[in-house]
Each structure stands twice: as C-alpha cells, then as structure tokens.
Image 1 (cartoon, rainbow, N blue to C red):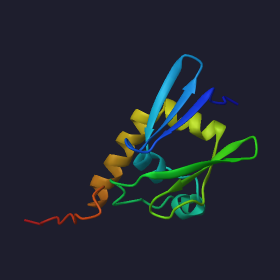
Image 2: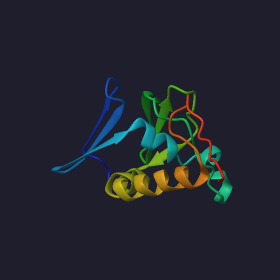
Image 3: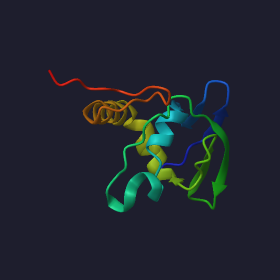
Length: 123
C-alpha cells in the first residue's frame, strides 16, 4: 500500500499535492470530487456522472484511521474515504481517468460548468 510521504492542501489553487518519494502529483479538487469513492458518486456499483463541478474546492482534509483521508469539499460533499491505494491510483492514472471523464460528459451532453447547459440540436 503506497502511503504518501507528504500531503499538502493548496486552497488557492484548489489542489491536493501528494508526494511519493521523489514523485509529486497535483490533483485538482474537481478531479477528486468527480472520482469520489462515496456511494453518492459510485452509485453502489453503477457510477453516477458528476456534472457542474468546475469551481469546486477543498475546505479541509482529515485523516481516517491509518488507511485513508476524508476530503471535505466546499459543495458540502464529504462522505467518501479516499484510501491510500485509491489516492495512489488516482494520482498515477490521472491523465487517463480525466480523459475518460471528459468523454463521458461529452457523450451525456453535460458540462463541467455549473452555470452552463449543453443543448444538442438534431438536424
């Protein structure tokens, strides 16, 4: 189980920095929010596409025993426990997971922006 050697919350840039030895990863709050391991997001085995999370930030992080972090987002979401294994997976697979998320949004005709609605015209 890879445990970060350093964890830093950067509120201004809305990122969580994780360091594993010499390697550092910067995960946006939006990325973490849409990949939350909570039942609200994971849907008990059928993930629920999260939309409109473009400006979401992290208010605080809390340890959850010796195995995870509880991330508290400024949209009120705080019910997912991010295990060390899951955080490492998010960090190391960030590019692919983000591309997959953007493709899902596009396919669903949804947006990252909470103030935007996507309308598809059938011509």
